[in-house]
Length: 404
Image (cartoon, rainbow, N blue to C red; front, side, top):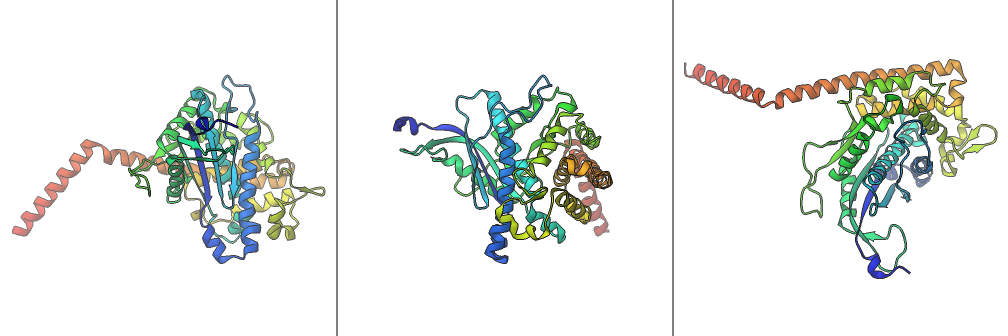
């Protein structure tokens, strides 16, 4: 038994909460069988797929000078209904290991989101031309203490657990990734990205082209005596290599020419891990049988269905940059599965759909850069002074006209 005094000593933790958006609405409109058998089960499958991927110790090749494999990571991930939580101790860790733990948490959140987008529940929504349902994530760092007389990893309490949960709630109102963090988390993740700034493009991960962007306003949250800054994970439009990197992912999916290609292939293959039934049939898990067993889907037919469905969506569905990049990453993963690139005819079609995603990203990227440049001009003190003078002269001129 650990001494009580040692148990109650506060330690620094990383806290992660993730929750589906709109679960009450789904539960109200659908039967309990559908809610548990399709909706919740699809989410659990997405979380388990991301968690299994994270458990792999050597996902990246060791060819680069700086290894992309995490030296430390979040380990304990708990799923309850439509919510996920993970707490990771940061005490007695080097700064580099702390950054790795933060990055692993962000990667887990992003992978879960990718798998959730392609899950049976969201595929069904896309088939009916409905917007995919999203999930919100909150990540925070702070002290907490273990409960007395408890040895469970998550039996801890403290203010900052509530802060993390409030950040997850605020993430629901965001408009890009809905993966949000406090300032300390954002700083450490950005430092993790900076560690690889000197690496060649072919040695980088997709997350190296993201950044936590500060939101325009501070937020007052229930139970917290001060407003907090909120940071949302977003595509880094200021990274000049970002579009070149995505373009490289389009090339020769049948060969591994860059390190991320091998990882994307694992992400796509992981989609079907431990789900074989017979020769080529698959089930996502027992409960997901509810909707998809009658279709007698194979690995190949499920991927084909996804490409067919996303290719038919109105442009309104992908008019947001982060979502377009996510669908592109998913496409790059799936076209690297053997069931697709061995079928040349369908491979060509899937690559065409992926190319269209890239074109949408390029258009949205240029649009955001243009908007950012315009905002920078309007925020310039000299421009603001000039605008005020013009406004003043306009008002004076209008008064003179009225007097006459």
